[in-house]
Structure formats: C-alpha cells, structure tokens
Length: 67
Image (cartoon, rainbow, N blue to C red; front, top):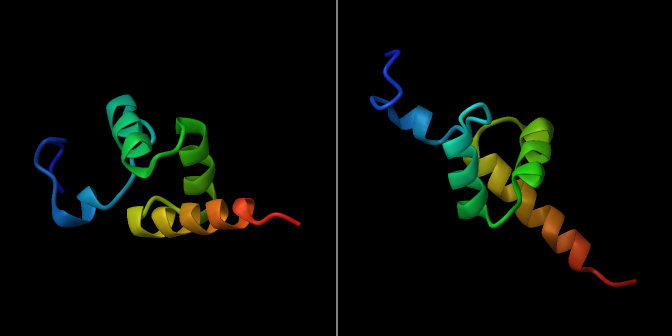
C-alpha cells in the first residue's frame, strides 16, 4: 500500500479514517451524523463504510420508534 494518502485503492475509499479530521468531517456530513456519533458507530462495527451506514440506519430507525 502506498504511503501517499492521495493514492488510495478502492478498499481505502470504503474505510472511515477517524484520525484524519477532514475525513471525519466528510464522512459525518455524508452520513448525516455528528463526529461523535460516527466514532461510536465505528467503535461498534469497524471502519467499513457500508457496515457503519447500515448500523446508523438501524440505530436511527430504532430511536424513531415511540412506545
């Protein structure tokens, strides 16, 4: 893998990098969550963007349910 962060492969594009502030901001915006919510989601399911997105959808759907 290249050390140049601007030369990334397809797998890198689907990973959420929490150590890069710009990437954190971009992913938070794309997924419509706060950076803290994104960090919690990544802690739960890992850094794969598809898994994080699905997790967030399920979490938001569950929070919308009224007793």
